[in-house]
Image (tube, rainbow, N blue to C red; front, side, top):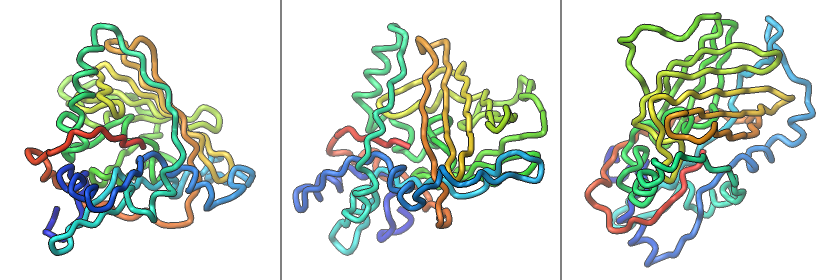
Length: 283
């Protein structure tokens, strides 16, 4: 919290437990892709706009991430918002039903331990960046001939990635440190933008539920604009811990509104947990 009246950017378990006694709320944070598509009916059937260089135009706002829930303190009372408010509940009614990554047997125990202690172990609940691929598809894209910039207003704060499109290769400097979002370079395969991501730190998860990965993680994103939609696919390949590559797909819809800046994320929950209830934080 920035001040006493500020909104938590990570879900405060102690507050949620108190709220549940006064006003039971059972909203499972899932996704708002279906709600976003409803804002632009027939989006996929429209002509696909192109840049001056002939490539599809990916510019625009494509997604809004509403987070896992917010809690605001007003006087001596706590008011729920975000994914837990009745106004936002309709945005979270379509389960994604994603396939789960298949781990090698020797990592099963570690993943199970992380999952069972998710509230303490999940980096995103302590304001750490989700990293790629957990960050999900871009919320807004700013595209030029030589680069694409992916913008995100996430519950962990504002994130951005710069994807070079000028033909350069990945950095080979051994002193270059691994980062949350890695080293991204892009290329066009026909009308599909392919983003290749390497040099990712192992301090992040692939997703919820203790989905760990190693520094050998290699991520490939594919974005193909169809009318006013983007078919987004991401594949995580980690030969150290995964039995096989893991792929997720999303359909993004061009949004009529602007991307709002996310509030700063400040972790004041650690050390005050009264419940270890599990949650989803699906992007």
